[in-house]
Length: 275
Image (cartoon, rainbow, N blue to C red):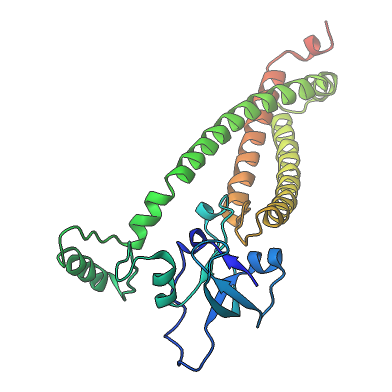
């Protein structure tokens, strides 16, 4: 037996039409509640507005999976879906509702429904689902912009670091470059060789980065889905993200290799030997 607080029923929804009088009352409960309370299909529960109060008995008819909604991740409440008349008795609203949803087909039908509901009575306000989604996602948009700013700063810093590394690595080969210059190898050939080597290193590095990012993303999703018990995707590596990463890696690698090679080949060959 389980007594459910009315606070858990704020977001409850009507699951189907009223059952016949002889049929037992049924409810659908959150799968997290079923796991925490040890409930199974067919168990009997008591629905009451306050703990310990007399209520109506109902049978557990179904389990409801938590939706993939970012705004629901941090909420620890349980959800129970009951029949509409049962919900009215529990919350004590009678024939009143705070909000309801209407399904429409097509943009024209949606606009028509919005105008009709808004004009039905004073105080009615109708919103399209996309507008509600935008309002409820404001926090996540701010976080997304913050992450984008961090990404830009990281790319700029990594570009400077990569250029410094390339300058040091190419400078270590100054004797080899000097020998090539003295035997008649042109500057263009030397620059081309350094740039191709940089491109190869950048390609290998970007491929390793994509693989590492995919593995880390899978671990993050596995961990936080277990913590919050939700199917929500917390980390995602898409083809677009991988393409951008590869293009940035190749571009920065080619630029760093070209600048480092140009700095080296412009010096006289004998000066590269320290003379």
